Length: 419
Image (cartoon, rainbow, N blue to C red; front, side):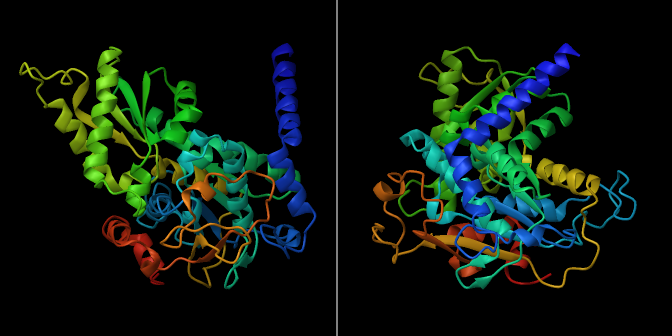
């Protein structure tokens, strides 16, 4: 009983902390003050008082990396659709659902905000993403509300999962919230397949700084964890014009620096890679090739210093598939799976800079200038220096469009309006 009381008191303290947090309190108060959803980043409160089962599922990321999570959800088939029993039945588990995807590309990469001391502003951005999905407003019309929110971004999960859950609770709406980090750690535990060595978490600098993966993995397994934080890889995959270095060279350099540091620290041998950024499954082959390159790379004396540090065969864990499973378990358990066939297609949105916003500063290519982007502070939850518009294939940078087309076929078809 004493243990239970201590746990209950910890929960009370946690909820109180969220209630007193200015970032969360501002978002909660903003939405509560506008129950008609008539201003930016607000939602129609009445939308969440009836039967939510046939509402779509919302998925968001800082850019297009979350499309890998959407692909995994669309392809997920681990249960019988009629009975819910374990075992694939040849029909995707979410075949009866429709989706709303949002990529906050104008404000990406999220992983850099903590590095420049803008963690509170990052948390505000993440809450704005959730509010966009919950609401009906977008630049060129309206969109439906959602019954679940999947945070398909590791950095956003690390810094915003508990904020969103606290806000949803305060608003009193029965919306399910799923994050990729917890799901990825569970996937690591359930699919070890004999791997017992060190785990290398590959993520953005921001995700690594949060220590979200080491904490989550420690809850389910005692395996040693070491993090590799890249400052530019996610942006390069997005096609950010400010990143001039080829993707393969970024990966090779990042992995080389990581292994050099691990060797100096006499770290445990690595046999598992956690793809801790939703962009990284798009370049999974290149990541594996970089580890293989350094494993076989001789030094000046002809020795291979990293051969004992990197297993000949590395297991890769993609949290996306486990996020799909966590989503299914939550929706099915809450009896919130769709009951009627979708009457409309999936919808995709992306944020772009708004040149009409007072004081906004743009780069030559029309995106937010770096100093402006990372110089902003929290406190204007309704700001519109970016606006959300439909995402179409022609809005994707050429390299990114090619990766989505070649590696995410279900999502590519959906982007083109093909069921």
